[in-house]
Length: 326
Image 1 (tube, rainbow, N blue to C red):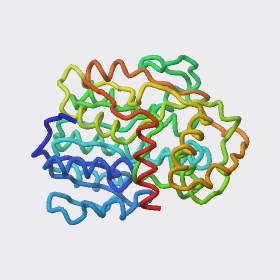
Image 2 (image 1 turned 120 degrees about the vertical axis):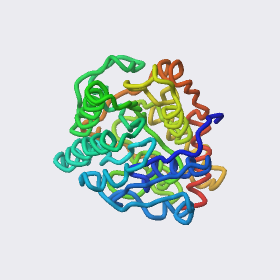
Image 3 (image 1 turned 135 degrees about the horizontal axis):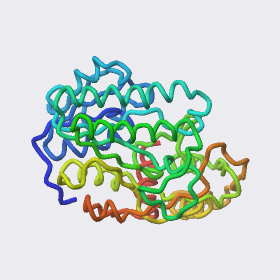
């Protein structure tokens, strides 16, 4: 990535999480000072093992639901990459209050702290879940439907709050609607594990993966390095690109059945026995969007976004990492 970004102080909220920790590493490689704010409710300390002893890395163990923690973390920061959130549609259906508290109240705290501490630009993780029941394909930023889960509601409210803070207080904001991000450091364990690491771990253990539904649902799976690129480009983008939202994806879609076939083919190189692992089909998951496919034309035009990793290229990298680390 040919992006000129160095000698800045950048706050990454949720910096011990999957996406956040990868962002911390890349920003430090580019000679920036990185502040990580995390309460370790879902983030993991081992995700910071590569950066924790770096003199340019500052860890603040705090909670975005606490305004004082947000003010402390944003002090002196040039930019904020806000990744902290309670993810997962099923988790939000089970506990909508917690999702609201973190994703909306915490988000508002971060906006206030960024405003009060004169942060130059606030880049935040939005979500493809915002498209809700819209059946349009590909998904275009200004055409959304009604939310299908409490999680989707919270992420849409984030966009509304960011827009209001841009117009009312002059805070530059950019929202990145992530589409099914996967890659190194994504946790395969737990009830709310993302589908790709979960499938990889199950296949590696010769356990039958469970696909919700008949496998025909499709997703625009997005490798972590594409997401890192979008975040860095959002920091350096000129002012005509701010105060809006962008799809961050590869711009393609694959069914869950396609995904499973790709994974099995890749993993056969590691263990031929995986060929004989059967796939189990379960019930559809409440709140799931049937099909997800992003138009990335807006991000290409205004951010100069150019994703380098297709699903298959990203899967090869991800599987390599999981095989070495699980």
